[in-house]
Length: 404
Image (cartoon, rainbow, N blue to C red; front, side, top):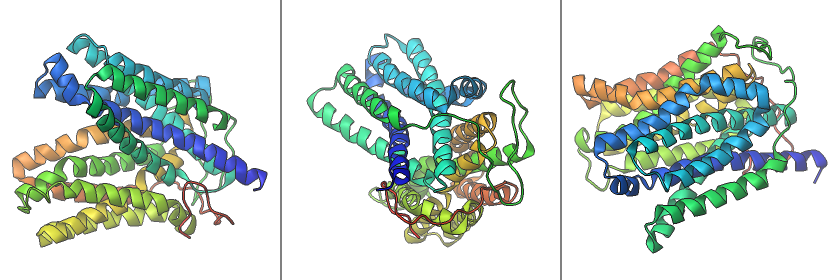
């Protein structure tokens, strides 16, 4: 194994561990929401506010994250925020009342915002340093972390329902992952200029806060529409299958399953597609496929066409977030932080907006708005400066082979 290849794999695994940490920590506490509800005596509306508070913390963390990225760099910030997520799990196991829980989850959202930006900056730096695509696979490990957390929650709950035991085990595992990943993380340095499709990346100073450029705003809009599509599919697909398509109770959850499986599979292979076709073409074509496929499914009706349309969404939007993060990272920490915050806002607000549309006109039109949102990603993608297409590597990466 050549030194360059070995260094790439070492850093790839280390950065992948950060993505796994984020998915693992989020799924760990979300999986125990029923236990928190019972222990604190909460109602449905209070649980909804809990979930929203975490998202609000992530969404409003943008100015702080930008400052911390410039002060500490992505390597140190990713380690500190990942460790903070473990501490937050321990705090959730002993929260005495509802207001304190809200405060803890607000800080959880801030830590999530910090880690989200820092780890994506690390992923983008890895691609730039070794001139190899890997961001989509890194995002796939987030889903792996969620799966591992769900299995752990189920296993621990079979022996004890005590939150302190579950979250204590989870916090120890998080700390071990961070400790193992830290040596392989990339040291921060001055960004290297890279070729792009049609324009040079925007330059930002290291001091002060730079106003977002038009290119950054287009990236943010693409992220908003992409996360609106993802979030709405997760929240509304089962209800659409049940109430509009009249699928049986056993088939209704298949909507989420189809979208999730297609997204994970697409992200495993998307880096190979990025190498062959370039990020811009992948985002434009994929989001158009998602919008058109879902629209045709809505027109056709029926369980099978609907599930096929949902599969098109999972396949089409899978690479949007990784590709936009790579493009935003090239613009600097302010751009990356803003784009991440806009993505979080879309993920939070999207399902609610679709709910308002569905309440006024029906769920069919609500899902039509999801199709339109996916198509708008393709429109935004035409205004974004994308990294130049890279040559395919001679050997495969460790996480999974490139589909080239």
